[in-house]
Length: 143
Image: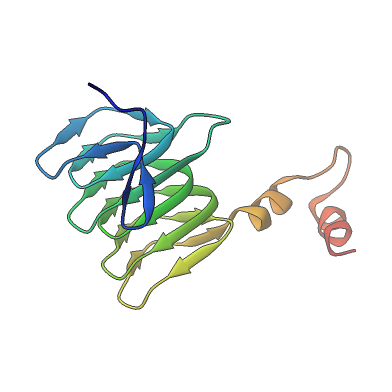
């Protein structure tokens, strides 16, 4: 009756599909492939230590934060996104919020109202060894 196999959509393995007529109000935790054509109002978080990717389709929208290793956005996002591996902002992407990334790909036509924040650069600045001043820590990071 139910399949354990994931399907393909736009070249990505999809385990969970949120259809165009679905509205979810509340936080969502997932693993595997999540494809969103509907609307989510709440925080979306990938399960810790498990592979996960989120695809926000052109007609999909999210109002809230996204935390996932791989994120592909072609719809509308109102909130910050944290992609620990990579993020792709496709041609129809509309993002109002900050994008925290390790690797980013942004297509012509994508719109971002917010900041691009490189995660590794941010971690170096925030990590100051005990007893060191920010200036000596910055010199050590460059060495």
